[in-house]
Length: 313
Image (cartoon, rainbow, N blue to C red):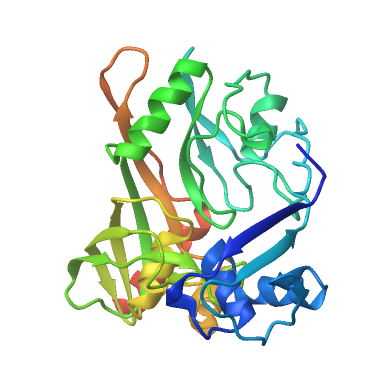
C-alpha cells in the first residue's frame, strides 16, 4: 500500500454554488464535514490555488485541491484463538462460524481485540487470499457487538461466488433483534438510504445521499416495553439494522450508540445491543445446492428474554 499523500483536484459543480468549503468537500468526496474541516485547518485545501479555511464559500467552476492523508497500512493478521467461536460447518470451499460478541470480523485500525480471521488462523484454517490484505476470505461482516453466523471463503472460486451472491442479494440473512417499544405496524419494511453520519465518522444514519437500504421485520414476541423481531436484510449496509430501527424510533435494546434507553439494558443486565444473526442461507459454491445454517441465542440474550417473560407473566 502506498504511503504517499494523494492530492485530488476537483471542479466545483453548479449544485454546490455558495456552499462552505467543508460542506462542499464532504459532498464531493463522500466523507464527513468534520474531516473536511480538519483538512482545511491543517492547510491541506486550496481554492483556485489559494489556501482556504473551512468556512470560505465556493463558486461553481472553481477548482478545489485537497491533499489527502496517506492511507494507514492495514493491520497485520495475528493468529489468536477466539474463545467461544464455534465452527458450524467446514468443507474445502468455505467455513461457517458462529461469532461471539466482542469479536471483530477482521483486523482494522484502532481494534486490538480478537478477530474471526485470527481465530481461524490459530485453528489452522487456510482461507482465500482474495480481498483486502486484512480481510482475506471475508465476504460479509458482523459488528463487534453483534453475535451470530458468518461465512468465510476458503478457496478463490468460493470467494468470488459468495461475493456475487451478496451483491445480487440472493443470500438469506436473518437476524433476531430485541427492540424498544412496539413497532406499528407489527410487520413491515423500512426502505431508507443509509450513509455516514453527517457529524460523526464512526456512526451511520439515514441520509438523503446514502446507499439504498431495505430491512424487513416481523414480530416474534411482545413484552412490556419491548418487542422481539425477526429481521431479514435485503441489503447489507454497515449498522443497517441498528440505524433503521433507531430511525423507526425502536432502537435495539442495549444499543446506546443509536439512542437506546440505558435503563432497560441495565435492568436486563445486558452489556451490548440485543442483535443476533440466527440464520444464513446461500447457494453453495461447490455444488450449487441451497444450504442453510442456524444459530442459537448466546446465554446473555437468552437470559434477558427469560427476565422479560417473567416480568410480563
